Image (cartoon, rainbow, N blue to C red; front, side):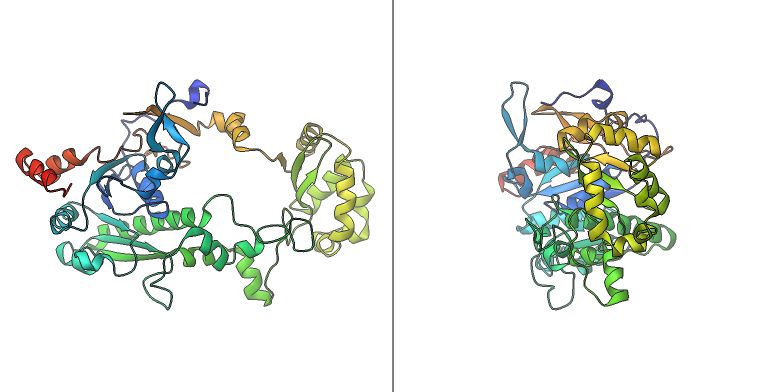
Length: 424
């Protein structure tokens, strides 16, 4: 296990006695893999009671997406894949055979005590089980029901399965990610993390909170229709706006910026730095710090629009200037001159960074089979109702008996009978 300073090995520094923003909310999480679980984990971190429903015997697909796996006290792999641990802390795991009539009946019972249902099945799939929005709304009219799919509940692609990689390509992200075609290594690239899944989970979180606010004011529930493709198109942001207002499809710029120069990576004597000169003043300080003040007054480079126009002339001059010093020397120099800059860290560098450590972004939580697992803290910080990460991702079915007893009021005999029939 990676060793972290003591300050990062505790849960949130906020007291767990503080009120939880969503302590009054219960979520039935029927989702798996990443987008839905990411949303559910956000809600759990904010205090919601999240009951994660998993398939008996196998559970969430990501439980098998390893190595790496969390290790026990003797350094041996447990059955807890690091991928699964990413998006499932703070939840209670209950195993239910959703394909069985008894399993479906159990879930409908659970819905009566829940505020939110999250699901990411194919369009129409849950209607066969009586677990679609229309069926559950009839049981609980104020239910907030969030469906996450690749392409949404309607449209010509609604029946298709959607995966992050495919959507990054279809939704335009890969067309603007990667080096230009005319340079070595040029071509489209996916992002190194599943951005579309994660952003869909974040948008879903916002939508659920908005729907709960509406319910609390009016008593009315609703269905939320979240699509990976919709999210990817929305998160094109300025790139999408550039196209809609120019009619020209943006191209890839690698580590440069389409609208700002210099705003890119540069090679130093011993590595690379990022220089992000977002205005004319920062550009002038950059070239003055590098001993090339004449570049600040060259008419071709006086303003950002001119620098964008003449980037093919300017950038090689800046590259030669940066290549004369080490990375550490440049960072110190540019920090002194107030020019935004920084190194390109690998993930090990990230968690060793003094600012990341000061903000306690790595946390260790007790775990029944691994002893403890180290996770990334929720970045939300609130003074009165802080997001807390104090409960590790559950083992498969860890809370089945508790939920059946405490939430549904099942007797030990009833639970034993359900187990004997393979329902739970």
